[in-house]
Image (cartoon, rainbow, N blue to C red; front, side, top):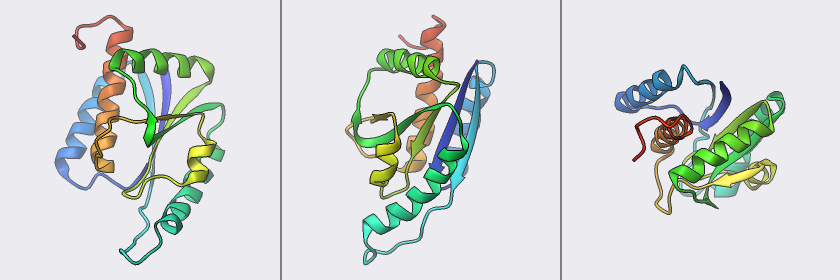
Length: 158
């Protein structure tokens, strides 16, 4: 069983995202232990400095990271490494073998602070496309589930 932490900025607001998340968590329940750490989004307007908002959220993320011991930290980042699903499965297996748990960090609408990215062991991009942070959360769970199916040689990934 792998241990995963997901540090996420913001809640899933729409019911369809919550339903999709619940489905993947149910599917993953036999092979992984997943702990969510939700951080409230900082309110902002177009006039607010982007870096200031990211720094405020980043401080909250770093406080949570300090409490999670022996973990490999992966920041979802627009300029992060991109993997095929098979490569992601191999990486997830490797990351999980390096420490007690793997922590994924999903920032808010403005992304992650530089400090959070620097504190991470690796960066990962789901796609060259931009997704909402709610969508990224569900896509990440689907890819984790797909990685588990690949690792177990089960029929899900073709």
